Length: 304
Image 1 (cartoon, one colour):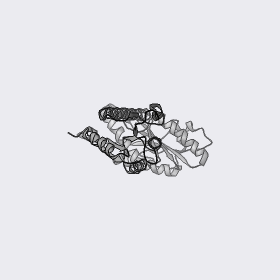
Image 2 (image 1 turned 180 degrees about the horizontal axis):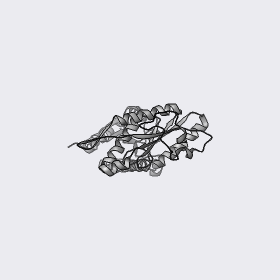
Image 3 (image 1 turned 60 degrees about the vertical axis):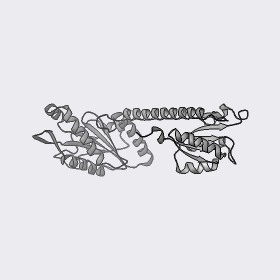
Image 4 (image 1 turned 30 degrees about the vertical axis):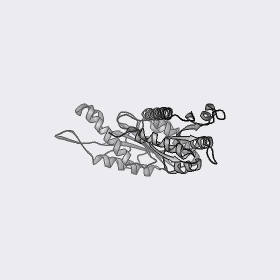
């Protein structure tokens, strides 16, 4: 079984070769990966090409000292720092912690104590990283639809506000698509919600595959989706809509082993007009702008 400590890389900074070697041997015997530096300047060079989780540094070093090194590390790097000193009267625990150190050890260093402090710092680091991952996950869940993984309607209105503000500043065109799966309730009632969910997921993937990097897609409601198209006029937006429609039409769904079904959609296309209040752009269209039997690009008015 792989040693779980191997993933952690430790940097030891001390101008005393015997101290460096003793620390490194002890830390490596515990299963950690470690490198050594004899000065702060050498440590900074190693930081350019290596990712260290913890740096153990003496305070007294040639040229740049350990406290100054700690300040630079905390400003430019994500590593934790354990400060070591033999001058407890000159340097306090509070001073080291205030500049960003994670712990403070007095020489002569007991290696068992150093290992306990190293493990504590690494454990706290892992807990912090886990909290950050959980917060990011929760934030993502708050703005995405759990089934389709597209952004949800709350995110849609937030992004729309930003895009309208960008339009008002730069006057670049802005368009919107409103997409509705035809007869989706009938499909659900006939084949079941599990099969209906498969359609929603696949359709979401199709929408994303037809968009550029700066476009964004949203699940607006049950079988309704929206797409915000920055830097896009109405004619180009219609081209995107046609591409989505044709891609979906080429997809075959098999809700039953002996049954093959084609799914069609109706799409509303509109370009933002500064003379209109933007929420009006998303009122329910009285007729589809683009449907399986209707491809006339002039049918923008029903979507306004």
